[in-house]
Length: 166
Length: 425
Ligand code: FES
Ligand SMILES: [Fe+2]
Image (cartoon, rainbow over all chains, first blue to last red):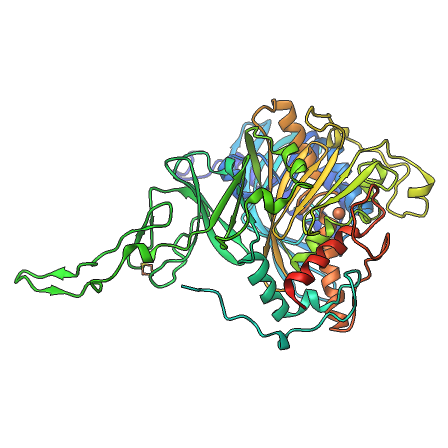
């Protein structure tokens, strides 16, 4: 069957669909506080960083949170649940449609904009952290896994502290 | 010309009734008039030097960054002769905050409104239509009065001190020399980190903390809390009461250093029993987060937390180094700007180590995030009690003196002793 001249290849739609589904599940995990499921969305040797845009654009390496490998992700989760004293808050992720940069059948590179709202008990909702994900996914047996997620945020001032992952 | 706001009369300010400085009234953290006087006397004048930058942030001639001295925004810029100027970001014509890019490189500063142009040192270089506009028939229209003097209309210049990579500034041109300001008790500890080695900048983190600015100074003059609030400190022996430690302060009680040496951590009845933040069986899944490597310049201490009143904290906590700039914003909030750094002599492994340990600090840090949180809760508590309450800082007595242990609130009393004197309340 001849393709329509501007038709999008099915494989692109497929990776788009997979990444969007992944991101929806990712946000849902964090918003529910299901941190073990959050860890399981990464590869063993993953890289997870939350980095101010100011540093990212200037080529400076400092992050707000920089975790290498699932071990460090676990240590962070232990911190959140057992050691970091903080006022609890809800997070609500709103993640935009992904833009697929490449998909070679082994890895997908993609970006997506996100905004995270914070709601403290008894208080109004606030815009908490706004930025974009820069991602590298790998195809695993059970679907996609994150090998690398950089959360590059615009928000120039963090509203006091950043406890939970973004 | 005197640009200072008219001084506030004493009658409008609350009175501190008690003797000494071990009971700090809640109004010291919440009263707007008290805050105005603090800004005038500690940040915008009164012989106090305020931190503005690290020299390494401005490597080349013309490099500048925006910073703050108290509530006033300033431009820190490196001139062609490599000297550093600090000028207020406020046009001498009609007051516009003309520089809007937080960092950049400039040959001169031009205010966009009417194009007044300033040299990097803040001198007014020129302005359009100063001599008026000459028409074809020779008539000259407008122009500045004949006695208009460029020299009288530069940007507000601050007095600048650079010290081995640190940049401080003050609006008070009669301020004492920087080293005299810091004093002989604290200078050696500054020298230990800033001995002239070239620094490298690792990056910035910024947070807005909804609490009074002094609470952050207090937090780093408070050796009592780290082994109690911070699980990591007590569990991994980074800071706790059974360590060898010293509390140092300058002769005014305003600056201080908390010095300590790491121990093996783990259980020790005297300091862990009943301490809920102590986690006996806690181990890290990834020990690279705390892969401590002693450095030759430590000469013993593994942690030195330096508070240089009123504007900055300088942190060495094992391999992690940072400056933490306090930018006050009303009585009940301040911005806290972290600049992490290393040394040019660091190899790649050391840089990576410093970056990994940076996970302990900053707005998300394993041991620093909860400091911001408790400061917020402190302010909430003060607000709730109104003018009546006071804090109790009487651990280790009511006096003020350096100590050779950390079971003390002496440094906080030292700071408020000085504060009372300068505030005259
Ligand atoms: S206000 Fe700056 S040039 Fe007029
Ligand atoms: Fe602390």
